[in-house]
Length: 163
Image 1: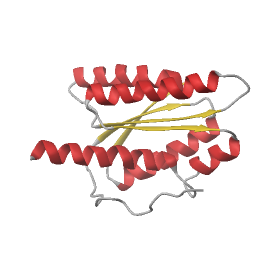
Image 2: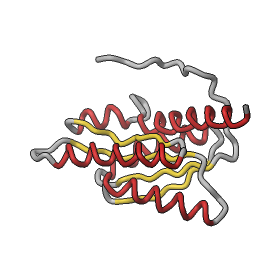
Image 3: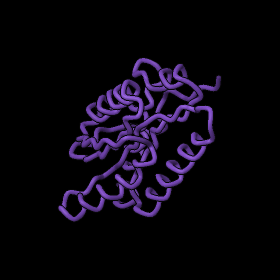
Image 4: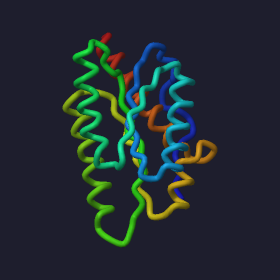
């Protein structure tokens, strides 16, 4: 198995006052709980605030993000970053490919169109074992990693806007 570097590419200073929107799909409640735990821990370590919205499945995440971004902007309290969390486990039909591909495509489209740091923490796996390995905070911690990825892009955005 290929592993990633444990060292961050850039320093990760805290980001106090940062508002992160987390939209989680609860199709697999126990895995969602673990992903959210990792995300909350990473946000707390970065001194960021998290607001969580919950949907049934991964396909509902992009629309929910768009709705929440618009509402937050209209209220004068925009989010600084977004994290999508969920899990899609391959089944016996081609539905997996549609859910995994279309949710990822829509998230990328949102991130680029809105110019907002958006991390895709939706696990796309073959089985429960792979999901748990990626979700557990004491293993790959993809929930925490998604928050860290969104904050890394946010720090770059802030840097280039200040320059």
